[in-house]
Image 1 (cartoon, rainbow, N blue to C red):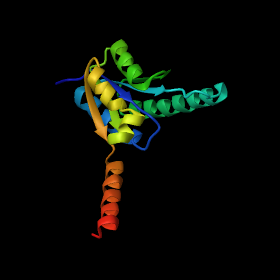
Image 2: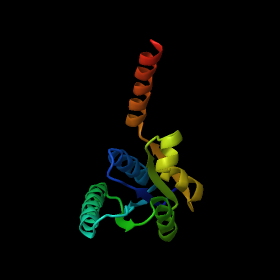
Image 3: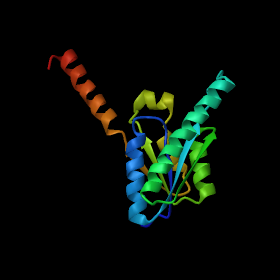
Image 4: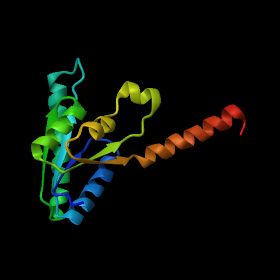
Length: 157
């Protein structure tokens, strides 16, 4: 399978650099263009000043990633939108005619996933193209370690 246009859904988490690395690798392998994308989901009660500050910070982050990708001689651009994250990613992929969406997954399961919602699950089930989900392995290691400690403490080893 060959990809020509990759939409990379970047947030400001520790996983962003991992997504960037995967995006560069895939773009080079496929001679693909990259579109870095961030969606801001506005919480009720957020002030206009706070929203503007966040948009400015996000645009700077995306511009930094764009400059790094250009150093790798990859065709790249970016955008930032406000809205429901999952829906906006799918809508943007459709508008851009992306043939791959690259996004992260924080590894939430069970009740936390039900409460927080799973953007990756939403996108996988509704995207107009292929989706590659990158697992946050550092978080999974922390969760597994916590489970091990929890089990040792409760059950005595």
